[in-house]
Length: 267
Image (cartoon, rainbow, N blue to C red):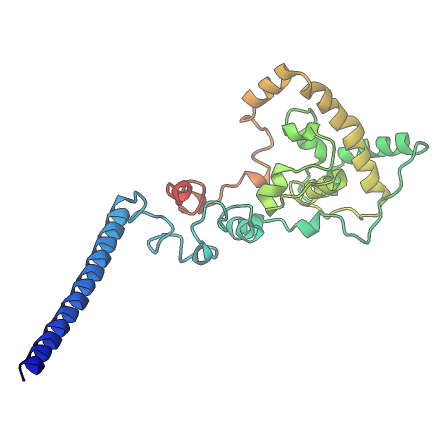
């Protein structure tokens, strides 16, 4: 009888011990969870971008910015930057230029230039360079480029190469050929219709630009003193008032998804 009593007491004690161990493990787990939660709160409180992230719901441009809702707030892949053609179109509105307007279609072939007709084509190109009738606003290529001063430094590079204005106006980051840039200038500053891609006129105008204007600029660009003075006077552009590229983006100053985002580099 005593043995049975001892067995019952031992069983009871073992059961109580097991329950105590389980409760102790639960308390340990809860404590760890509490510590983890407190650490998370401390990290949030230490984040200088919390509460002032311009890409959060308090973004004043969110309602009107078609790219705002899609913005992942990633500085490396920001759909609000002008590298995104959709963003460029949204930001520029009517100032946006569709790359299809000036990028050569694959099915077209340039008018052939050869040693026998090159000199004549360049001469014809000079006339077209000064022809205000190519556009609809009275401007000609020569209006802004009578001298070499208004060409960007990249003009000294052989075509094709990237052109800043096609990046700014179209979000187009690929290299542009010389005839494509000619078409861009006719369609944009001059507000004209691009020339026929197979035409003699386009080949002539391109030949003049590459063989006369560009070579002249390349010779000057080789002089570091010329480039220094050019950069210093870059703000005095006599064509700026007539240039549709001069318009400022009305939302740029208040769009916190632009490069002014103070949190972008930290996210």
